[in-house]
Each structure stands twice: as C-alpha cells, then as structure tokens.
Length: 121
Image: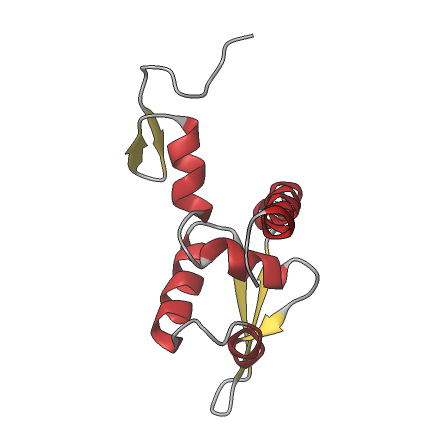
C-alpha cells in the first residue's frame, strides 16, 4: 500500500496545493481556535451566542472568521431559521466534521495528560 503522507509529491485539495497530507489536515483544523470550535460542536449544534459563552477568550471577529472558514472547508454547517430579523443561526458538524471527532478526542486526552504532568493551573 502506498503511503500518502509527506512524500515528495504535491497534493491539491480545494484549489490549494499542499506538500503533504499532514499540512492539508493542519490547514483544515489547525490554529488556535478551529479545533476548539469543533470540540464545542461535537456533541450538539450551537448558536453563535452559545459558542461565545463557551469560548470567552475568542474575539467575535475571530470566531466569525473561523466559523466561516470551517463552513467553507465543509467541516461545519450553518443553518439559518427565519427570513427577517431576528433570525436564528445554528452551527453543527457536517459528516466530514464528525469524521474528526476521534482525532479531537485523542488531542483532548493528550492535552489532559500534559496538564496533569507538566502544566500549572
């Protein structure tokens, strides 16, 4: 079986060229907030205001931009209820987003181990 990860061949996905599958995956879920947003959506759909309450350290602009990027990349679905204000918007994981849950749970467990062994709370 051919290994896809980190070979010398370039990989194109959604119009972007990546040097390897690791960089593709990290582009989709990497950064300070994307995985955190996905974590908060893994068990249920949430409204923007609920995400803001659960993630008080993120700015409104950053949350909005990251949600748009996650939606563009197909990891998060945005559903709008109503035609005129006040409209209600809910965010949820797509099937593609749900495929990341096992990885997210591993990252969470690893983070928990680090805190227990090395971090100061």
